[in-house]
Amino acid sequence: MRKIAVIGGDGTGPEVVKEGLKVLAAVSKIHGFKYEIIDYDLGGARYLKTKELAPDSVLKELEKMDAIFLGAIGHPDVKPGILEQGILLKLRFSLDQYINLRPVKLYNADFCPLKDKKPEDIDFVVVRENSEGLYKGLGEFQKKGAKDEVAIQISHNTRKGVERCIRYAFEYTKKRNKNKKLTLCGKTNVLTFAWDLWQRTFNEVAKEYKDITTDYAHVDATTMWFVKNPEWFDVIVTDNMFGDIITDLGAMIQGGMGIAAGGNINPEGVSMFEPIGGSAPKYTGKNVINPLAAICAVAMMLENLGEEKAAKQVEDAVIKIVKTKLKSLAAGKMGYSTTEVGDLVVKNLY
Image (cartoon, rainbow, N blue to C red; front, top):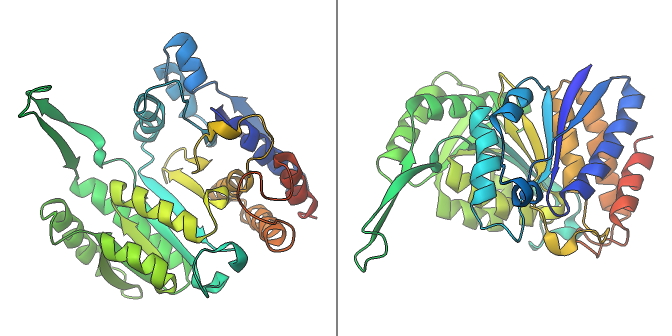
């Protein structure tokens, strides 16, 4: 019996999670695997009531789960940074989810903003280091509030952290077995300390993977090529901040945030899966938000749990309705409500 922690969170998070769990229930019956759902009340609403973010007692419980399914964290009445630092980053760092995995895959060319690009042109994966870099939260103010104030933000990179991320990316490229090409995305010409470490480590690990073709691209060039030649990419590995930026661009070229799912992966521990679009508070309670990103997150979770056939069945159902049913992937423009889209995915499982 697998234990799955569910954090609905804020805004539209609980709405899309509900549809993801609907699909999970249906596909589990088809494939005969059992699971138990444990709900956790974490998010802005709880923080406003109790001033609690992610208590250590909850973190200890989450360590014992087989997976975590997250809806969204973000509340308009909470100052930016509090929930992100106190919940999202705390979960990732405490559970050592050192890989952020973001598939970028176009299901329907009609929803792509790029001219003449087809599904076969946009099918790559970003492997983002998820526990170090600028998001480590290291730095200081000097003379805060003065005219000559200085703010220092440190990008903290360790050989261990960089190497395990790069090794994961090589192994993923090998397992993916598409073009067997891994691109290092960085900024070696300016960020000469951090990216010297990344480049040296990448080159050394590459010697162990003779069957993998490697190349390098500056992060600014990567964003250009996402738009001009996305077909050049197979797997990309990068640091925490660059990965955060380029995966949002990736979401847009695959059709928008409504279809973009991600995984926070600890290959040796518990991983967390989520739609990456945020809490979208303006759509809360209107039954118009697109739940497909959350449903795709369920597919990623199933694959991580070893249920590859079930994962593929969910993705195939999503692809079918994106190609044949939906008018748009944007909230309120799909031609169906949130719950109806969930029902369509369930129907197309069979």
